[in-house]
Image (cartoon, rainbow, N blue to C red; front, side, top):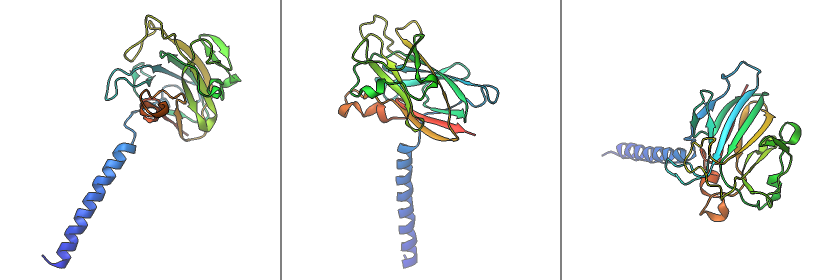
Length: 225
């Protein structure tokens, strides 16, 4: 084989290796959770009604024991999706069905409600601006969007409750708390959201596993103009 032929073969092999490496890398960093579109579910300019639930164990998929969020689609179906397409500069009425138990927070700042309309959340119909996680049933998770200063603590259900939901999606007959807030979406862009309560059981300081995984305890608000 000529020198040119050997160089061409080497270049082809190099490009194949690079292509395989890129495929592997992008396989890890590209979201596998589907995007749920809320931009066309109601007339333009009207509020978006967004309903999600937090569960103690997803019950299916590659990590059935992981904690997770689920979202109700505009068609009324619960799915495991944490990327939501929302219109910009629009009021969002968020309802969170919290089915997981709680515990005292390591940092009490996450018990403070922030970035919501009126600076409060409705916890089972009662407005609160702060929840003391050392009292009651503690906090199970937070729904937080750092870029817009939104923090919503999710008070846990009693761990001794006889009707704890074991497999998602959970239904209202299981022990749960209902948290409601309203906030306004910002300008167009991609805004990450996540839980800030370490709940990755079996990982270092609870910050691994579902805590950093799309489709579980984190996602994006895909805000469009």
